[in-house]
Length: 387
Image (cartoon, rainbow, N blue to C red; front, side, top):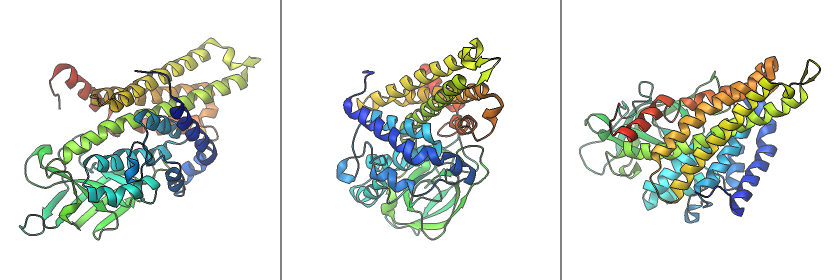
């Protein structure tokens, strides 16, 4: 694995860093307080090619490698994780999955719009009663009649769906037969304006407050057979494949949170005076800063390893779980340590570290909890599944 960035990768990182400094950071506190990111950010992300990274230019993408994608998501996470989530879901979970499993017609219909920001995607897997147990979905899709190739009628509900109220297309997972467990699950591309689909935005979240998180309810939503993504009954494996790469993106975003915590804490420690000198002079403050710095570097290297494996066509799922597990927990530690450096001022949103801690906390929950990541890693080590 080459730890040096190439010229193009450095250029992508500078572009992302400049974009965040100009278009994201100045608004992050206001978006957090309003519980809403300015939707105009989507087109701006698309214009710079950030919504098309790793997608073939033939379908409107901007190409590039997965390390470049991680560099962008790190910078976005450094500025506002709510914005990072837009890219991670619409591109990372939806567009990339369409590119990998879609028919030519599906790719032509959705990828040019998703990669430019003309459309937004959301990932409809989690349900009110099924989070970690993703193979036990209750949402059902049934044929309208007995004719193979006919329409499907989908009914059920989905919960905690990022981009849910903004989305133009839902990559939706539903049970299509009575086979128990994950073998009965199929994937569909459902237009978000389909009759029978209602969406309710979830407010009052601890973190990622600017992100459009929603509950989706489907009541006999009709889609044609051509809306199925991949073979019937293979939806669960498609979802798990998407989430494996998605964990790389979450890990990169967590590196961004941890780096932002380090930057803020170091700057504050050099300015804040107690007992007649800046608090950076005190050993226990330096201990807090050094702990954050080590977590940042370790999380970044684990994440870059996943990107390297993906780009070389190697198996990466276990490495992605390791990166997501470590980086998400490290982001919580980093933000918490930074808040300690700030003392009481860290507890008000005039300063960034309180928001960083709130945003970091959910990273240990979604796209597989820390406990699920440990079970995935344990299964790879022992060959025995504990779930």
